[in-house]
Structure formats: C-alpha cells, structure tokens
Image (cartoon, rainbow, N blue to C red; front, side, top):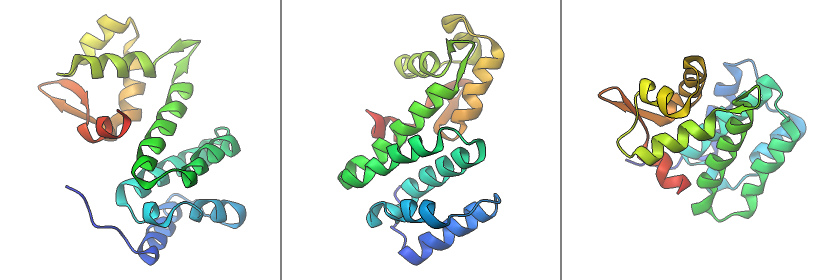
Length: 166
C-alpha cells in the first residue's frame, strides 16, 4: 500500500524533526546536497525514510561520509523509478563493507541464503549453512530489522525490498 507523496514543506518539516531528534542538523553544503535530490523523490515517504536513516547513520559514525554522499547524489541523474532501487543498493553496499569482521563477510552470505531459500531461514539454519557465529547473525538481523519479515521463526526479506533490488 503506497502513501501519497508529501509536499516540500512537509518533507522539510519531517527532515528537521527526524535529524533534530537525533541531535543532527543539515546546514551549509550538506543541506544543499541533501535538497538537491529530485523533488519527486524527496516527497516519497519510502525514499525519504531510507535516505534519512542512511544520512543519520553516516553522520553519526562518520563512515567515509563524503564518498558515500557522492554515491547517494548520483541519484540525481537517475530516472525516478530507479532511484529507490539505487538507494537500497547503496545502503546494502555500505552494510556489506561495515558488516565484515576480521575479513569474514557477514552481510552477503546471510542475505543471499535468505533470498535463495524463498521460504526464509531460522537463525539455526543460517548458523549451519553459513558457518558464522551467533553474534554475527545477530549483527545482520539488527542491521536489517526494518527489511526482514518473520514467519514461524524463519526470517525472510520483505517483498518491497526484493521488488526494488531485483
């Protein structure tokens, strides 16, 4: 079920509230960069939610901020129907880089096994299939919690995410 687009004024109020509640603010160059993204996208509740989540994380942890922001700003050159998919992919690229522990990839193996299973996998199945530790599976689950569904103990990726990244 899709939500109606927001006005620029509503989008700005939401952005100010979201970042302000986290002690963050957009000013100067960052504000110009942020609002240079396509107006139609900035009115999309899903796009704005993803962008705000990502922006606040990279501001908080200082993860290669300028490089990642430049990647996000590439969205300006994309047609609207592809920009949410691109943002999802950028998010997953960052997660894949971040979720590596002692040169052991965490994100890719777990995500690919969940998607390939179609019916989802339990934590126990993921432990057995991937050979990862419980703590590594928990890091993945915590990171992806907004994008996972659970049915009878089996985790799966939400259909909305699959729609945008396929």
